[in-house]
Every structure is written in structure tokens, then in C-alpha cells.
Amino acid sequence: MSQQEAPAARPLQMGAKGAYIVRLLMVGDSSCGKTSLVLRFDQNVFSTKFVTTIGVDYRDKMVKIEGAPMRLQLWDTAGQERFRSLTSNFFGRADGFVLCYDISNRPSFDHVIGWMRDIKTRAPPDCDIVLCGNKADLEGDRVVSTEEGRALAEEYGVEFFETSALTGGNVETMFTALAKTIKRRRIDDVEGQQASVTGGNTAGHSVGATSAGGNGTVSLGRGADGADGSAGSGTGRSCC
Ligand SMILES: Nc1nc2c(ncn2[C@@H]2O[C@H](COP(=O)(O)OP(=O)(O)O)[C@@H](O)[C@H]2O)c(=O)[nH]1
Ligand SMILES: [Mg+2]
Image 1 (cartoon, rainbow, N blue to C red):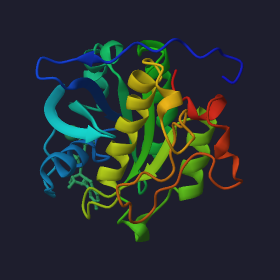
Image 2 (cartoon, helix red, strand yellow; image 1 turned 180 degrees about the vertical axis):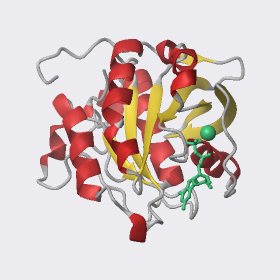
Image 3 (cartoon, rainbow, N blue to C red; image 1 turned 135 degrees about the vertical axis):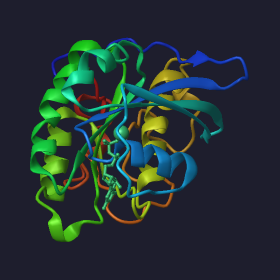
């Protein structure tokens, strides 16, 4: 992937109400918490009920990212095989993906590879991805370590968060980070505004610390060895 040239990013579509339209798809195995993450982010609620998502659900969430109004369209897909061909029709129009697994469910983590393959074959090359290990509150049942999650994210060059829809930990941070990455690639870079951004690191995709007060377990890509300064190339440029 490091050999690949970065594809030209399309500008984000501007909606009628003066906000950029950002299509985010929730993908991952059934019951890893996709619907719960969307509900936590959108309404700040959590329910223990498992309501099967049929096909695709949709919610709108307005956010302001670094001054840019963005209408996040959250497409909450069903993880079951039988819906797969239906949901994958939506891939081609996505701006970003939240690829979820459940830290207490090993197969859901093993299947990340398949989901990633789907994204890479069907999604636009300039989409951004975040890998999201959900149910971080279930520490006692954890079977996927944070390091494994982070290592896989690094391998793919995508951002990584552990979240809990139950406690709300890191949920907003994760969505905001993805929106910020998309904003930088699809608005700032496209409009050639890097030079005017203060504080350096404009290419910066990534990451690390999104400002939104992440408690808990944010961790990203290349933090550990200080390599995250290498912004522009390779790793941070997630997709596809
Ligand atoms: N402990 C815990 N349970 C969760 C969390 N997120 C979702 N769940 C539960 O996991 C089940 C499946 O969640 P759901 O959001 O429907 O998963 P989806 O199939 O991926 O949309 C439900 O019983 C939720 O209450 C979480 O962060 N922590
Ligand atoms: Mg669901």
C-alpha cells in the first residue's frame, strides 16, 4: 500500500443548508454494537436491547469540525451475510467507514479482514476508515487486546479506537476523529488550504488525540514510536 500513489480526493458535496454532506457507513459483524454506537453518538442513549437492523438504517447528525459545518449521514448497516449484497450497494457512495468489532468476540475481530476487503474493492479510493473495537467496558470478557487492534489498524493504515457504547467512552471522539480526517482530506487538502492552517501538521490526518476529550483508550496508528509525524505518506492515508 505504501507504493500506491494517493488518489486525488473528491471535494465533499455541499448540501442545501450550507453543510458538507459526509456519508459514514457502520460496518462489521452483527451484534458488535454498530447500532448502539450510532444511538450513543446521536442521542446519547444506550439500550441493552438487541434490535436487529434490517438492511440499512439512517440517521443525520450535524457537527462542526474545525469550523466546518458537516452533516454526518450515519448509515447503520446490518452485519449478517444475508444483507451483505444489499449493504454493499452503499459502499460506493461512502465517504468514511466505521469498521467495528467486539473486543469480547474473537470472530468479529477475525472478520475485520473480510470487511476491509469489501471496503477496498467497493468503496471510493478516497474514503477514510476507522477501526473500532467496541464494548471496551467488558474488560473481564476481553479476548482481543488493544495491541492487536492497534496493530491491525496500523497494518491497514487506518485510525484505531476502542469505544464503549454502554458507557459512552470514546464514542464521540471516534466519530469526531473520522469526520476530522475526512474534513482535512476532502475540504482542506482539496481547497489547497494547508499553507494557511496554523499550528503545523496540516496534512495531519491523524490523529492521535482528537480534541474531544477522549477518556479511556484512544490510541492510534503509529503513536508509540513517535512515527506519527510522518503524516502524509503511508499509514495515515487510510483507505483503499
Ligand atoms: N457491554 C456492552 N454491550 C454493548 C455495547 N454496544 C452494544 N452492546 C450490546 O450488544 C448487543 C448488540 O448491539 P447492537 O448495537 O444491536 O449491535 P449491531 O448488530 O452491531 O448493530 C446489544 O445487546 C447491545 O446492548 C457496549 O459498548 N458494551
Ligand atoms: Mg444493528
